[in-house]
Image (cartoon, rainbow, N blue to C red; front, side, top):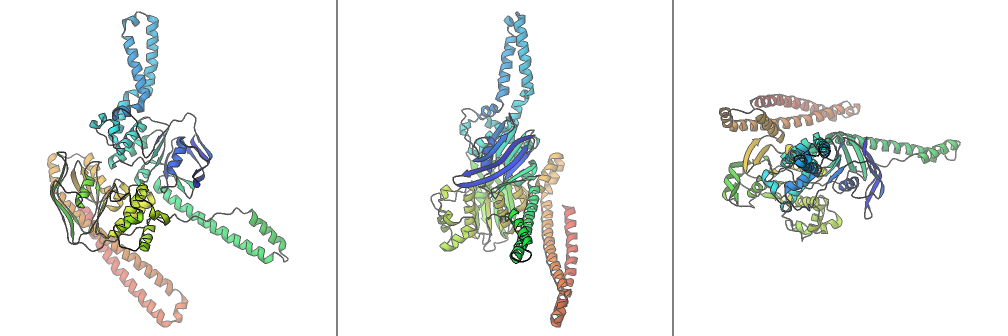
Length: 639
């Protein structure tokens, strides 16, 4: 059964077409991820489906009596009461039923009702109806469900009595999301719901939405989240809406296949058009004029396939690490941070070596940003010491983008950190999609994504060998996140970053610092390996003696894992060398197979000699690979 139907929908903003005409159908039970670059109209489309706006052309239709709930990115909660009272409003229907049940129970206890059989019978009948409706609405579990949603999204028991007016912007979004989820509509429309959520809350939301019995359209740039919960992808691209079955990863494969098909169809048609036009030109006036006219009519009837659109311009980012730092880059000893007589961070000893890639994760408010700022020298700890190695140059990225001056223009911001010429800065900003008059915009009017790109543009000019990044992918769309990931993967310096994007963390981090209530757990490995280790610990509780023994061996286990990673890195380098040598060997063999080569005896001899040398090199590389693979296997067993 169709729940939402879009028919030739077009939307304009001023004189600019946002998208359209687009058509699509959503069926009951579908869970759709709506994706696309920033500015393509994802929020606009959600608002059309929610009935908050009207299309300029076409029609948006919903199934009769379908209940729709919409969560916008920014919410203004005009509610005069506590967080708990606000959340309870999600189940106002059951609250009214519960209140009526209490009234009827009081009437049943009234002696005057007992003395009137007809009146008592009426009260009992109504009570049965109200109680039936209450049970059908899961009334007895309403408060438990609301608590589960609030706690799952990061609130604590102490937060429930906070006035809604006192909540931060992020807390208000989480409160609105909890209330929306508990209202259980037929269709949930969520615009970037993972903003302001830490990893634990994101994973809780994933679990909730997987089991949600209604339908869902969610805008998100979180690839792990999309892979986990959606069974359809709608992608706004080139003013059109493309639909794919499956999750985000599956949609990327199908998108590439679609683009390849479109290119082949276009080229084939262009070739056919050229053939027909050539025939018409050649035989228009000769004895084949009739056949030429037939081909001319075929040309006129042909539905011309549009040329496939080029990939939209993406931000380009290349990070230089400047001077090579010493082996030990930064270390912390006995560091603590105290706010209002409460210790929010405690680090006994922590050290980062050159080339390490550390991901800092943990709940909101656990001290992640504080730790990054202390490491950057921007915040003085209450006690302890932060030390830096030889030739360390630091660049810091703040999630609040507080290093930007709203009164300066984009160009003026870069002039604060660079002595490049105006022309060179113009060219540099173009790499970050600031073109033409964009460079003269005031920072204060930029969107979150634009401010993020500007900060990255400044970061590149610093040529630092230690990057300390606090939520560097905030406000970025998926293509821009992928650009940042690729640049950081190739970055030769040392990287420490905070992120709630699990895909990003897993792709970059080789060491995890897990902060909870200001205490740090240091884990050597990827995020997936960290999660797997956590699950094992959770599922297999250990006796205290065994835990103590395990803790004593943690340092040795970490050394073994580091040795394994070094061995794996060397193995990967060998595999790359083998792949390059195989390509050279194949190229030489193709040259040797060409009989024209042997017309030049000297060149043929040189080519044959080069082939023998590359074959010998390959034999040596394969022997090294086998030895290194054995080392990796042995270390893997030890780990």
